[in-house]
Each structure stands twice: as structure tokens, then as C-alpha cells.
Length: 75
Image (cartoon, rainbow, N blue to C red):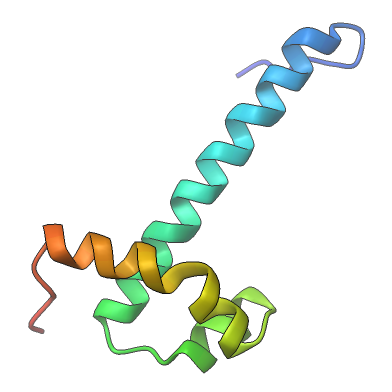
């Protein structure tokens, strides 16, 4: 994979946007999986370097929406 350099700012900025979107999607999916496995908001917050309250505020609505579309794990 070739990473655009600063000599092509349009391509470099497009890559930054794509990476941010990918990171955001991965973060939400990982949090949803953690909740499904019984992690507390405190554990999730600690893993992300934020407070439990911040983690809950940021992800709870998205996690609830995803759980409505996918059954919880029963392991």
C-alpha cells in the first residue's frame, strides 16, 4: 500500500479522512463487542483512555442500535 505524502495534499487529506472513518467504525464495533461480552463502561473507558461516563455518553446509543439489529452473544 502506498501512503500519499505531503507533496500531494489532496491525496494525503483524502487518506486522513478514510483512516478516521475506518478508525471510528472499528472503535464502535469493538465497543459493541465488548458490551456484548459483558464489559462494564468503566472497563471500556479504561481501554480507550476516557472515563466510564464519557464512554457511555459516546457509545451507548450506537451500541443499543446495533444490538437491536444483531442478537447478543450467548457464550
